[in-house]
Every structure is written in structure tokens, then in C-alpha cells.
Amino acid sequence: MALDYVLGDEEDHYLATASGRVHYFENVRGVSAELFTDDEGRLHPLLMAFPISLTDRERPARCSVRFVFIDEGLSGEAKFLRYLDAVEPLLRAVGSFEVIYVANSESAFRSAKAAFWSRFSQSAARSRGLFGEDVRAARAPSRSQFDARFTTLLFRHSYPAIQRSKGAGSGRVRSAGEVRTDK
Image (cartoon, rainbow, N blue to C red):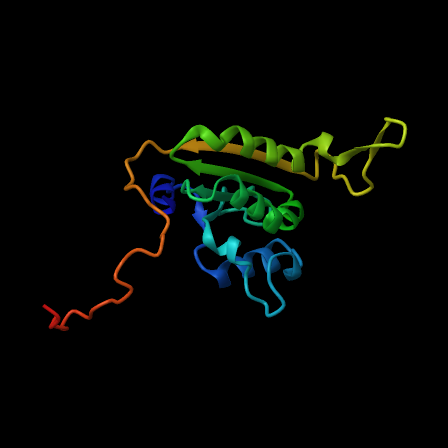
């Protein structure tokens, strides 16, 4: 599905490698590497698992960054929530971004949209005070500093049914030249 997405959107400039992504966020956008790498300096696995692109290759330091999440239908909302947990600090540091939720079923769109906006809407920057009054969080960015967008994309392609492994199968793989002798 990721390949279908990338091939269908050739206008964006994709950050295809881990080193390219680290270089872009750290050197071009000036984001602290601790927001998107582990203790050994490696890109967070969920940031490498999905496409990331720039909307304007001519102005990479100021353009909006697209983060694509591919829902293959196996792990549902839980994986998207883990993805948001992993990328939220980076998204906030980038400031202008779009998360594109790609799936071949609309079933999770509503909950994904709600999860996204619960983190990134202006009202998410507010909390309820002791007596019910709205209290703004101290680090809530202004609209001019923070431009978050969420888009859903439904693929209508026919993909083969993927089933979770239940321990079935031979448990052994034969090499191409191996001859079976247990007849």
C-alpha cells in the first residue's frame, strides 16, 4: 500500500532513507535529534516504516511535511495511537504538517480523526481547571506557529487477504535445490 501511495503522488519530494530523514529534520528544520531518534541515534522505527514527504522541494525549511500512516487492516487503532505517540514530538517541532491516514476500508477513519484532533486541535491545548474553567496549557502554540492537518485516503485497490499466522505451516523452508526424500 505504501508503494501504491508513493507511485500515486509523484509531485511530493520523498525522504526515502533513514539518513536522509535524520539530516532533513536535524539540519534543515533544526529539530533536536532526541525527538525522533533512539539513544543510539537511529531513527524511530515507526518514522522509517511509512512515507514522509515535503510539499515544496524549493523551500524545504519552511514547507509543510506530510507523514503518511498506512493502515493495512491488521492492527487497527492501536497501531495508529502508537504512531502518534512516536511522532507527536516531531510533528510539534516541525509545526506545519499533514498526517495522511491511508486505508482500504473507511471503518477506522472516524476514530483515527478523533485521535489526531484530540492531540492537535486548539481545544486540545486546553485543560479543565478545578472548577470547570478553561485553562490554557503554557506551551500551546499559536495558530501562526502550528499548522496541523489530517487527511484520510481510501484505497479501492484489491489487495490479497492477509491473515495472522496461527503457527500453521511446515515450520521449515527448503532451498531451491533441496530434494524431498520423505515420501
